[in-house]
Length: 126
Image (cartoon, rainbow, N blue to C red):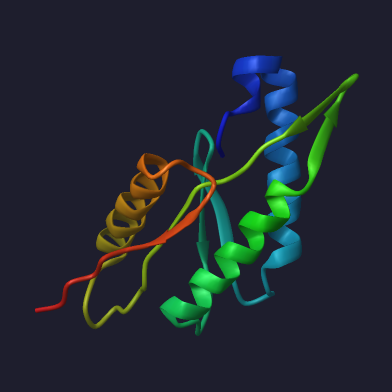
C-alpha cells in the first residue's frame, strides 16, 4: 500500500489501514480465490481460473475501490492507494516462486512509474 499510514499516523492507525485493506480484499475475492498478507504491507492474491487479462481487470477494480475509500482513525480520515503487480500462474511453465518473482518485479515497476496502478508482468517463455 502506498504511503503506508503508520509512518504518518502511528502503528495503531497503520493497523487500521491494514484491517481495512484486508476487509476490502475479502469483499472482492470469490470463495475459490486465496488472499494472504505476505509481509509488511504486501499481500498476494491467487485468482482461480483467471486469465492474466481477467486478473488485471480484477486488480484494477480493486485498486480503484481502495483509492476511493478512506479509513477513519481517531479524528483522522486516512486515504491510501495501492500499487499492484500481476503475473500468470501456469504450473506447466513456472514454479510458484517464479510467479511471485514476476509479480514482485511488476509491483516495483508500478512503484517506479508513479504508484497507485496495476502493472502486468512481462513473461517470457522458452
